[in-house]
Image (cartoon, rainbow, N blue to C red; front, side, top):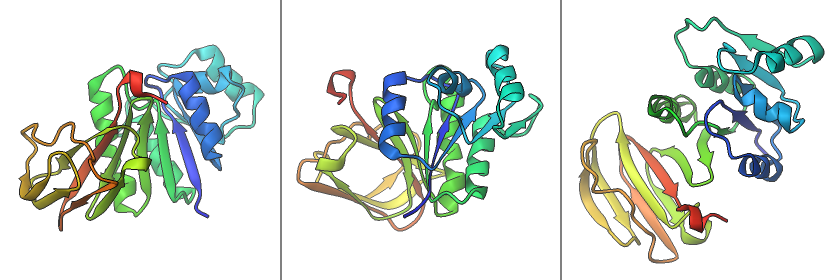
Length: 222
């Protein structure tokens, strides 16, 4: 069985949801990132590691972890070449994870969200399954043939976007809006909010990286 690591980052966190993910996944390792420490502190969850520049966390909580725990801390100067979440992702990879879940990577500033989505490329290229999760969205990258089973979808909708350029020969079957030999481009909204109509749908393409978002509205959350 592979090693699952959960990163708790400093974006918007719905506490009940985050707690349910941690309980369900039984993560082998939890990495607290900057303001994400506050969630862990409030819920008496001892992280395996803490990383960040500590520019947005309550300093009393930061001092608690520095002075009253044995949690390894990787503290960085705020003037650096990578985001705190990226640093946590790279740490998780050195710890040998085979699956990586990131909480607190959405909400608030869109620049941070988009940086986090693009940053999924780092574990993806290393053959590690990485996902961004919040109550309404599951975001991951795919690099070829992918089956979407309706019973296992995160929500009733899925959207796809190319990452890094056009994707040629792109196909969707078993969905409300099928595609055949389509060129997936980064500057149109054709592939937003599709739905699986059969027991399963299939996405196929031969080259490129595609962002896959499975989504649900608030009233559909379970």
